[in-house]
Image (cartoon, rainbow over all chains, first blue to last red; front, side, top):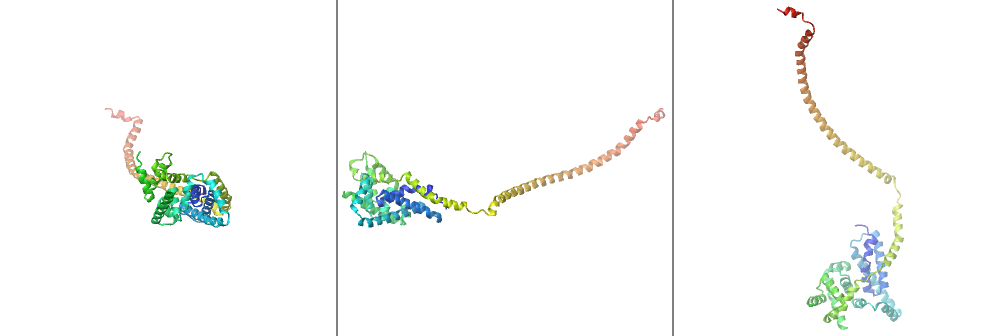
Length: 158
Length: 170
Protein backbone atom coordinates (compact mmCIF):
# COMPACT_ATOMS: atom_id res chain seq x y z
CA UNK A 1 0.00 0.00 0.00
CA UNK A 2 1.56 3.26 -1.10
CA UNK A 3 1.55 6.27 1.16
CA UNK A 4 -1.40 8.63 0.78
CA UNK A 5 -0.63 12.07 -0.54
CA UNK A 6 -3.11 14.70 0.60
CA UNK A 7 -2.98 16.73 -2.57
CA UNK A 8 -3.04 13.80 -5.00
CA UNK A 9 -5.12 11.14 -3.26
CA UNK A 10 -7.59 13.01 -1.04
CA UNK A 11 -8.16 16.52 -2.39
CA UNK A 12 -9.43 15.36 -5.83
CA UNK A 13 -12.46 13.85 -4.06
CA UNK A 14 -13.58 17.17 -2.59
CA UNK A 15 -16.23 17.99 -5.19
CA UNK A 16 -18.07 14.70 -5.15
CA UNK A 17 -17.93 14.62 -1.34
CA UNK A 18 -19.28 18.16 -1.28
CA UNK A 19 -22.23 17.12 -3.48
CA UNK A 20 -22.94 14.14 -1.27
CA UNK A 21 -22.88 16.30 1.87
CA UNK A 22 -24.93 18.91 0.07
CA UNK A 23 -27.57 16.34 -0.80
CA UNK A 24 -27.90 15.43 2.86
CA UNK A 25 -27.49 18.87 4.47
CA UNK A 26 -28.76 21.26 1.76
CA UNK A 27 -26.43 23.92 3.10
CA UNK A 28 -23.25 24.75 1.23
CA UNK A 29 -21.37 26.09 4.26
CA UNK A 30 -22.17 23.03 6.33
CA UNK A 31 -21.42 20.74 3.40
CA UNK A 32 -18.05 22.42 2.99
CA UNK A 33 -17.24 21.94 6.67
CA UNK A 34 -18.23 18.28 6.38
CA UNK A 35 -15.86 17.76 3.45
CA UNK A 36 -13.09 19.46 5.38
CA UNK A 37 -13.65 17.22 8.40
CA UNK A 38 -13.79 14.16 6.14
CA UNK A 39 -10.51 14.90 4.37
CA UNK A 40 -8.70 15.82 7.57
CA UNK A 41 -9.94 12.66 9.27
CA UNK A 42 -8.86 10.52 6.31
CA UNK A 43 -5.48 12.22 6.33
CA UNK A 44 -4.90 11.59 10.03
CA UNK A 45 -6.14 8.03 9.68
CA UNK A 46 -3.81 7.38 6.75
CA UNK A 47 -0.80 8.36 8.90
CA UNK A 48 -1.30 5.32 11.09
CA UNK A 49 -3.43 2.87 9.08
CA UNK A 50 -3.48 1.69 5.49
CA UNK A 51 -6.70 2.62 3.67
CA UNK A 52 -7.51 0.08 0.95
CA UNK A 53 -10.27 1.77 -0.99
CA UNK A 54 -9.79 5.51 -0.52
CA UNK A 55 -12.86 6.49 -2.57
CA UNK A 56 -15.22 4.21 -0.67
CA UNK A 57 -13.64 5.15 2.67
CA UNK A 58 -14.12 8.86 2.00
CA UNK A 59 -17.73 8.35 0.91
CA UNK A 60 -18.50 6.39 4.06
CA UNK A 61 -16.90 8.95 6.39
CA UNK A 62 -18.42 11.94 4.60
CA UNK A 63 -21.90 10.42 4.64
CA UNK A 64 -21.71 9.62 8.34
CA UNK A 65 -20.42 13.06 9.25
CA UNK A 66 -23.15 14.70 7.15
CA UNK A 67 -25.85 12.55 8.75
CA UNK A 68 -24.50 13.40 12.20
CA UNK A 69 -24.61 17.09 11.37
CA UNK A 70 -28.12 16.82 9.98
CA UNK A 71 -29.26 15.10 13.14
CA UNK A 72 -27.54 17.67 15.34
CA UNK A 73 -29.09 20.51 13.37
CA UNK A 74 -32.60 19.10 13.48
CA UNK A 75 -32.20 18.80 17.25
CA UNK A 76 -31.01 22.41 17.49
CA UNK A 77 -33.52 24.01 15.15
CA UNK A 78 -36.34 22.87 17.36
CA UNK A 79 -34.97 25.13 20.09
CA UNK A 80 -33.82 27.96 17.84
CA UNK A 81 -36.07 29.97 15.60
CA UNK A 82 -36.61 27.55 12.74
CA UNK A 83 -38.44 29.98 10.45
CA UNK A 84 -35.58 32.41 10.50
CA UNK A 85 -32.97 29.74 9.76
CA UNK A 86 -35.05 28.25 6.99
CA UNK A 87 -35.71 31.61 5.39
CA UNK A 88 -32.03 32.49 5.41
CA UNK A 89 -31.09 29.18 3.89
CA UNK A 90 -33.79 29.49 1.23
CA UNK A 91 -32.57 32.94 0.28
CA UNK A 92 -29.14 31.70 -0.61
CA UNK A 93 -30.32 28.62 -2.44
CA UNK A 94 -33.73 29.06 -4.07
CA UNK A 95 -32.42 30.62 -7.25
CA UNK A 96 -30.76 27.33 -8.12
CA UNK A 97 -32.91 24.72 -9.78
CA UNK A 98 -30.85 21.80 -8.60
CA UNK A 99 -31.56 22.66 -4.98
CA UNK A 100 -35.21 21.89 -5.63
CA UNK A 101 -34.30 18.43 -6.83
CA UNK A 102 -31.89 17.99 -3.94
CA UNK A 103 -34.76 18.82 -1.63
CA UNK A 104 -36.81 16.05 -3.14
CA UNK A 105 -33.94 13.62 -2.77
CA UNK A 106 -33.26 14.91 0.73
CA UNK A 107 -36.78 14.01 1.78
CA UNK A 108 -36.04 10.35 1.07
CA UNK A 109 -35.02 8.12 3.95
CA UNK A 110 -31.55 6.66 4.30
CA UNK A 111 -30.05 4.71 2.64
CA UNK A 112 -32.30 5.40 -0.34
CA UNK A 113 -31.19 9.02 -0.33
CA UNK A 114 -27.47 8.19 -0.37
CA UNK A 115 -28.00 5.56 -3.07
CA UNK A 116 -29.85 8.05 -5.30
CA UNK A 117 -27.27 10.78 -4.69
CA UNK A 118 -24.34 8.52 -5.47
CA UNK A 119 -26.02 7.13 -8.56
CA UNK A 120 -27.82 10.10 -10.09
CA UNK A 121 -25.56 12.95 -9.07
CA UNK A 122 -22.21 11.16 -8.96
CA UNK A 123 -22.87 8.55 -11.64
CA UNK A 124 -21.35 5.72 -9.61
CA UNK A 125 -21.86 2.05 -10.50
CA UNK A 126 -24.05 -0.12 -8.31
CA UNK A 127 -20.94 -1.94 -7.13
CA UNK A 128 -19.20 1.29 -6.11
CA UNK A 129 -22.27 2.34 -4.16
CA UNK A 130 -22.43 -1.07 -2.49
CA UNK A 131 -18.77 -0.72 -1.46
CA UNK A 132 -19.22 2.78 -0.08
CA UNK A 133 -22.42 2.08 1.84
CA UNK A 134 -21.53 -1.48 2.88
CA UNK A 135 -24.62 -2.89 1.20
CA UNK A 136 -25.08 -5.81 -1.17
CA UNK A 137 -25.50 -5.18 -4.88
CA UNK A 138 -29.09 -6.38 -4.63
CA UNK A 139 -29.88 -3.99 -1.77
CA UNK A 140 -28.48 -1.06 -3.74
CA UNK A 141 -30.68 -1.92 -6.73
CA UNK A 142 -33.76 -2.14 -4.52
CA UNK A 143 -33.00 1.19 -2.79
CA UNK A 144 -32.48 2.96 -6.10
CA UNK A 145 -35.63 1.47 -7.56
CA UNK A 146 -37.74 2.55 -4.57
CA UNK A 147 -36.03 5.92 -4.25
CA UNK A 148 -36.67 6.78 -7.89
CA UNK A 149 -40.27 5.67 -7.60
CA UNK A 150 -40.73 8.13 -4.71
CA UNK A 151 -39.05 10.96 -6.60
CA UNK A 152 -41.32 10.28 -9.56
CA UNK A 153 -44.40 10.39 -7.32
CA UNK A 154 -43.29 13.68 -5.79
CA UNK A 155 -42.80 15.15 -9.25
CA UNK A 156 -46.20 13.95 -10.38
CA UNK A 157 -47.85 15.56 -7.36
CA UNK A 158 -46.50 19.01 -8.19
CA UNK B 1 -37.67 14.21 -34.64
CA UNK B 2 -38.40 10.89 -33.04
CA UNK B 3 -38.03 10.86 -29.29
CA UNK B 4 -38.95 7.20 -28.84
CA UNK B 5 -35.41 6.39 -27.67
CA UNK B 6 -35.44 9.08 -24.98
CA UNK B 7 -38.96 8.08 -23.96
CA UNK B 8 -38.00 4.47 -23.42
CA UNK B 9 -34.87 5.59 -21.55
CA UNK B 10 -37.03 7.63 -19.18
CA UNK B 11 -39.39 4.71 -18.65
CA UNK B 12 -36.48 2.38 -17.92
CA UNK B 13 -34.85 5.00 -15.68
CA UNK B 14 -37.84 4.97 -13.31
CA UNK B 15 -37.68 1.19 -13.26
CA UNK B 16 -33.97 1.44 -12.35
CA UNK B 17 -33.02 -0.55 -15.43
CA UNK B 18 -30.80 2.03 -17.15
CA UNK B 19 -27.02 1.79 -17.30
CA UNK B 20 -24.67 4.58 -16.18
CA UNK B 21 -24.15 5.53 -19.84
CA UNK B 22 -27.88 5.70 -20.53
CA UNK B 23 -28.40 7.90 -17.48
CA UNK B 24 -25.65 10.18 -18.74
CA UNK B 25 -27.48 10.40 -22.08
CA UNK B 26 -30.64 11.48 -20.25
CA UNK B 27 -28.81 14.19 -18.30
CA UNK B 28 -27.14 15.45 -21.48
CA UNK B 29 -30.40 15.41 -23.43
CA UNK B 30 -32.20 17.50 -20.83
CA UNK B 31 -29.26 19.87 -20.46
CA UNK B 32 -30.17 21.41 -23.83
CA UNK B 33 -32.50 24.40 -23.94
CA UNK B 34 -35.12 23.09 -26.37
CA UNK B 35 -36.98 20.12 -24.96
CA UNK B 36 -40.24 18.92 -26.61
CA UNK B 37 -43.38 19.72 -24.65
CA UNK B 38 -44.38 16.14 -23.93
CA UNK B 39 -41.01 15.52 -22.28
CA UNK B 40 -41.15 18.71 -20.20
CA UNK B 41 -42.62 16.90 -17.21
CA UNK B 42 -39.30 15.53 -15.94
CA UNK B 43 -37.03 17.92 -17.81
CA UNK B 44 -36.32 20.00 -14.72
CA UNK B 45 -35.47 16.87 -12.77
CA UNK B 46 -32.89 15.47 -15.18
CA UNK B 47 -31.46 18.89 -15.97
CA UNK B 48 -31.06 19.64 -12.28
CA UNK B 49 -29.28 16.33 -11.73
CA UNK B 50 -26.80 17.49 -14.35
CA UNK B 51 -26.47 20.86 -12.61
CA UNK B 52 -26.06 19.20 -9.24
CA UNK B 53 -23.24 17.05 -10.61
CA UNK B 54 -21.31 20.19 -11.53
CA UNK B 55 -21.29 21.68 -8.05
CA UNK B 56 -18.00 21.80 -6.26
CA UNK B 57 -15.57 23.62 -4.02
CA UNK B 58 -13.16 26.34 -5.07
CA UNK B 59 -9.39 26.52 -4.83
CA UNK B 60 -9.63 28.59 -1.63
CA UNK B 61 -10.84 25.38 0.01
CA UNK B 62 -7.67 23.59 -1.15
CA UNK B 63 -5.47 26.35 0.20
CA UNK B 64 -7.22 26.38 3.54
CA UNK B 65 -6.88 22.62 3.94
CA UNK B 66 -3.31 22.48 2.72
CA UNK B 67 -2.45 25.19 5.21
CA UNK B 68 -4.14 23.15 7.92
CA UNK B 69 -2.27 20.03 6.85
CA UNK B 70 0.94 21.96 6.32
CA UNK B 71 0.82 23.08 9.95
CA UNK B 72 0.88 19.45 10.96
CA UNK B 73 3.18 18.12 8.30
CA UNK B 74 6.52 19.70 9.28
CA UNK B 75 6.31 17.90 12.63
CA UNK B 76 6.22 14.57 10.87
CA UNK B 77 9.00 15.61 8.55
CA UNK B 78 11.12 16.91 11.43
CA UNK B 79 10.78 13.59 13.23
CA UNK B 80 12.18 11.85 10.19
CA UNK B 81 14.95 14.42 9.82
CA UNK B 82 15.89 14.35 13.49
CA UNK B 83 16.46 10.59 13.41
CA UNK B 84 20.01 10.20 14.76
CA UNK B 85 22.43 8.88 12.19
CA UNK B 86 24.18 5.84 13.62
CA UNK B 87 27.71 4.96 12.60
CA UNK B 88 26.39 2.05 10.56
CA UNK B 89 24.01 4.38 8.73
CA UNK B 90 26.81 6.74 7.98
CA UNK B 91 29.20 4.07 6.80
CA UNK B 92 26.59 2.07 4.88
CA UNK B 93 27.07 3.96 1.59
CA UNK B 94 30.77 3.19 1.69
CA UNK B 95 30.05 -0.45 2.40
CA UNK B 96 27.76 -0.44 -0.55
CA UNK B 97 30.36 1.17 -2.75
CA UNK B 98 32.98 -1.27 -1.52
CA UNK B 99 30.67 -4.18 -2.18
CA UNK B 100 30.01 -2.91 -5.68
CA UNK B 101 33.72 -2.55 -6.33
CA UNK B 102 34.35 -6.01 -4.92
CA UNK B 103 31.73 -7.54 -7.15
CA UNK B 104 33.19 -5.84 -10.19
CA UNK B 105 36.68 -6.88 -9.16
CA UNK B 106 35.65 -10.51 -8.67
CA UNK B 107 33.83 -10.55 -11.98
CA UNK B 108 36.70 -8.89 -13.78
CA UNK B 109 39.14 -11.26 -12.11
CA UNK B 110 37.25 -14.36 -13.12
CA UNK B 111 36.87 -13.11 -16.67
CA UNK B 112 40.54 -12.25 -16.76
CA UNK B 113 41.48 -15.63 -15.35
CA UNK B 114 39.31 -17.38 -17.91
CA UNK B 115 41.01 -15.47 -20.69
CA UNK B 116 44.46 -16.05 -19.24
CA UNK B 117 43.76 -19.73 -18.80
CA UNK B 118 42.67 -19.96 -22.39
CA UNK B 119 45.71 -18.07 -23.51
CA UNK B 120 47.97 -20.18 -21.32
CA UNK B 121 46.41 -23.34 -22.68
CA UNK B 122 46.90 -22.13 -26.22
CA UNK B 123 50.46 -21.14 -25.44
CA UNK B 124 51.17 -24.45 -23.79
CA UNK B 125 49.79 -26.30 -26.80
CA UNK B 126 51.81 -24.05 -29.08
CA UNK B 127 54.85 -24.58 -26.93
CA UNK B 128 54.36 -28.32 -27.08
CA UNK B 129 54.14 -28.13 -30.83
CA UNK B 130 57.19 -25.89 -31.01
CA UNK B 131 59.24 -28.22 -28.83
CA UNK B 132 58.41 -31.01 -31.20
CA UNK B 133 59.39 -28.97 -34.22
CA UNK B 134 62.28 -27.59 -32.27
CA UNK B 135 63.71 -31.00 -31.54
CA UNK B 136 63.35 -31.88 -35.19
CA UNK B 137 64.97 -28.65 -36.18
CA UNK B 138 67.74 -29.21 -33.71
CA UNK B 139 68.29 -32.67 -35.03
CA UNK B 140 68.27 -31.36 -38.54
CA UNK B 141 70.60 -28.56 -37.60
CA UNK B 142 72.90 -31.01 -35.94
CA UNK B 143 72.80 -33.13 -39.02
CA UNK B 144 73.41 -30.10 -41.19
CA UNK B 145 76.28 -29.20 -38.92
CA UNK B 146 77.66 -32.62 -39.29
CA UNK B 147 77.28 -32.54 -43.02
CA UNK B 148 78.48 -29.02 -43.36
CA UNK B 149 81.58 -29.62 -41.33
CA UNK B 150 83.47 -31.28 -44.19
CA UNK B 151 82.40 -28.46 -46.39
CA UNK B 152 83.76 -26.11 -43.86
CA UNK B 153 86.85 -28.19 -43.84
CA UNK B 154 86.88 -28.10 -47.59
CA UNK B 155 86.39 -24.41 -47.45
CA UNK B 156 89.23 -24.02 -45.10
CA UNK B 157 91.29 -26.32 -47.23
CA UNK B 158 90.26 -24.24 -50.19
CA UNK B 159 91.61 -21.23 -48.42
CA UNK B 160 94.94 -22.79 -48.18
CA UNK B 161 96.65 -23.06 -51.50
CA UNK B 162 96.55 -26.55 -52.61
CA UNK B 163 99.95 -27.75 -53.08
CA UNK B 164 98.38 -30.82 -54.44
CA UNK B 165 97.35 -28.80 -57.45
CA UNK B 166 100.58 -29.30 -58.86
CA UNK B 167 100.80 -32.78 -57.68
CA UNK B 168 97.45 -33.45 -59.10
CA UNK B 169 98.54 -32.08 -62.34
CA UNK B 170 99.31 -34.93 -64.50
